Image (tube, rainbow, N blue to C red; front, side):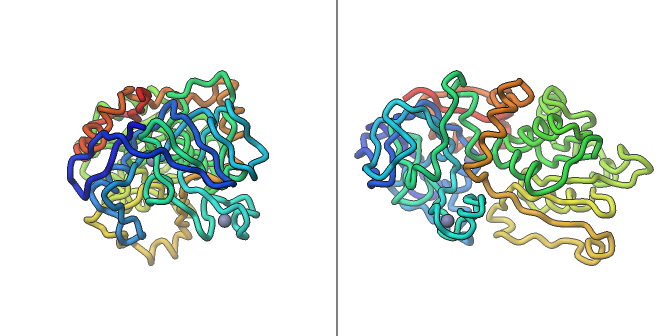
Length: 355
Ligand SMILES: [Zn+2]
Ligand SMILES: [Zn+2]
């Protein structure tokens, strides 16, 4: 099968013929219809995430935001049959540890990140496998367009899981989204659907315009103000600060700006993961976080059981993940798109749909 193959950190990736993955008795083999192209692919390609154990080796096939049709089913799989359309979270659970049993498969004790390890290769390929399919795979409504939902396993879903299940967003809350890349724009759209007053923050006027299209009520252009947290606070009543702030990028500046844009009792949601610059560490104003009782939450992917909520909101048009998609490309174009994500010029989510 044709696949995009990693050749080493910052080496050009190649499109080659490789062996199809062979799922075990608990897994399924899926023919790829679409796969989102993500900043996480770029991080892994750069060799950024050694400190969290992501050390891709040459030969790896990336791609962790897949949609496809089942073509082979392992003997132990009950819930799926050949021909079913499926998607899955990028972080695959074991299905039996206490977190998986508790509905939190995204933080499974032995979570496997698809497309980042050699024994669970990704979907920048004609076929991919999903382990523990009964637990991890999710049936996709037949009517949804594969391109529209290709970002679901990662960026859109993480924004949804974070805003709906980690922090408390109630209608009228001020929610400040720092960073309007794919995950940030997803967060803007989800927060708007939840009835929040949304403040979008970014360096790029073009991304802010997109954020306004997706429901941002106020915007802060980072280069145009002296003090980003103050500019966010000014939009809130008596400049009291945001109720919820999201770092949707993962650099020290956006993380601190987000925390500092919160009011007393506010909640920070960290979605972006850091670059080699931070190496996983960001210093924060701990004392005022204590005295203001500001809270810090992480959101990592989505458990498979939360997809239905997204599909129901898509069914009535409240959520339209396809609106975040920026372009569709062929498998041959994937290496160039991944390698180009470092310039931060992509507006929205690029999706590969040509296999
Ligand atoms: Zn992703
Ligand atoms: Zn587990």
